[in-house]
Length: 396
Image (cartoon, rainbow, N blue to C red; front, top):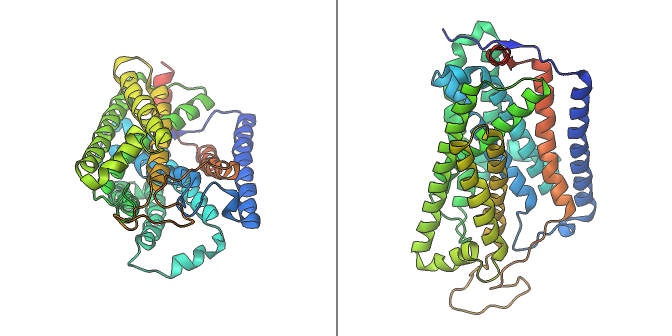
């Protein structure tokens, strides 16, 4: 029979809780104000146009959805693969999964507009569309993780924790495959249309999810005046280093495969070398993702002491840099609608699109993070699941 993780009541002051809740609420209010601005004025107030239809809000949304899948790895390592050091962290892992998924989906719905029509999307499916399949995957993820959490907290059902964890593990792989396939099936864009994107997103989710977990866990411990056990910190650091290295490898394979094909070489030169107006994307890729988001965290994790939290923050920042390049840069590259012919139209054919995010887009994106933050703070306070083993280690 599976053993239940032990939890104790959080020790934070009530004032701290209400302060954190108010901070997250401000971001939510700002996101709602941005949404009302969109609804009143239309998307003309954003930096998006006919070529770049997925803007900064989608960068935030995709990050949260992919990280929601990856953060569940912590629970899987504990309850599915039997690693004792990770078992007490499984409930926080599940809570973060639900919170991040809720925040990401909130951003997507508010950015698209008319969120009340989500009922139509949830009841009328076009099974030829990968978007319809993702509606099923997101809904299923919420249900499975909720059951998974229930088996952890309800002692009568602790024996079902491992089967529920296995179901969540399988479902999250399918969900991240679906997210990567959204881009992989876009044959009209040279940036995407690749079968490598599904496994790439799965591997990226490992590192991004664990980085988010480390940052949130550190904040929760600071909130309660506790410190992480050194042995657990070393385990998390080594695991994050492996995930970062695997992510860089898959990203390199993706770009090298693209560069091999003659028709993709101009796109790779645009994105990675800054040719044809792609200077910002090359800077973000090499400086933001490769250097600050991968190489520096890898060094901090393996060759410095107590570098876990800083490395995790850098991995999160690098994830945003990567997604900005991937999503925005992928759309900014000129469309080749009629190869070998010159086409002139109001859509700027043959020209790299210029995109500058507007302040409502930024507020909406940060509002999604605020929603995830509020759900996490409330969950930690109400459910009281600070791992008891870490408290014992911290008190010695």
